[in-house]
Image (tube, rainbow, N blue to C red):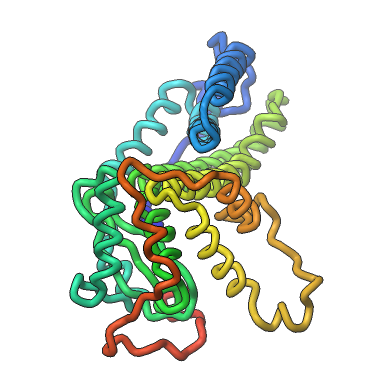
Length: 375
C-alpha cells in the first residue's frame, strides 16, 4: 500500500515553559469539562441504530454496514490516539494543530508514482494486446463499480500468488503476479480483479494512507512526550510535583495501540473488498476458490509435508489480512446473486488465462531483494 513519507523536524522546548504554561501532559486538570461517558453514549446509540438497520437488510448489506461501522470506529480511535499526545503536550490548541497538520501532510505530502513503486518489483505494464481477456474483465468490473476509467494492469515477475493496488482512484494500478496469472482460472481472476477494484471504489488506499499517517505521528509525539518526561524528571522531583502515572502509561502505550488499530482497520477493509467483489461479480465461489489456492501456497510445501498438524498461525491481532478460512466462510455464506447487469462470470467456467510467449515463466523462488521487498 502506498503511503506518504513523513519528515519531522527537531523541536526545542524549554523545561521551564513545559511546566509553567500548562503545556505538559502531567497535570490532571485541563480546565475543560470533558465527559467521556457522553461520548460513549453517542457511540453506543450509533452502534445500536446501525445494528437495527442491519437486521432489516439482506446478508450482504448487513456485512457492509458492520464493516463500515468497524472502519469508522477504528479510524476514529486512531485519530483520538493522535490527538491525545497533542492534548497532553500542549492543550486544546496544540491538539487541533496536530490533527490539522496530519490532514495537511496527507493532502499535500509527496506521493510515490505507481510506475516507480512497481518498478521496484520489476513490474511492467500489461497492454490490452498482451492480455485482452483481463482487460475485458477489468473494463466490465470498473464500469459496474462506477469508476470513470479502467485501472491499468501491471505484470510482476514472481511465483507468489498475489495482486495489489497502488495509486489513487483517478490513476489506480492493479499489479498481478506471474504465479497468480498462471495458476488461477479466469473465473478466479475475475474475483481477484473485482476485489482490487472494490478497494479502489471504496477509497481504501486513501483510508489506509490516513491510518498510516496517524500511526506515524502518534509514534513521533509519544517519543517527544517521553523525552520531555526524562528531561523534566529532576525538576519534578525537586518541586515534588504530582505526576499522572496513568497519563504517562497512556503516552507510552499509544503507539502500540495505534499500530494494532491500524492492523484491525486493514483486516476490516479486506473484508469489505471481498463483499464488493461479490457485489460486482455475483459469484462468491470464484473469489473463495482463489483464496484457497493463495492459502495453500502461503503455507508452504515443506510445512505441509513435515509438520501438517503443527501449523502455528500468526496471532489475529498482528495480521494485516483476516484469516483465509474466515474470509472463505463469509464468502460462502453469501448466496450467488447477479449484479445490476447479467453476470458474465459463470460463462468463464474453468477456462485459464494464457500469457503471451514473450512472458517467460518465472522459475526463481521468492526471496528478499536489495530494495527490502519480498517477491
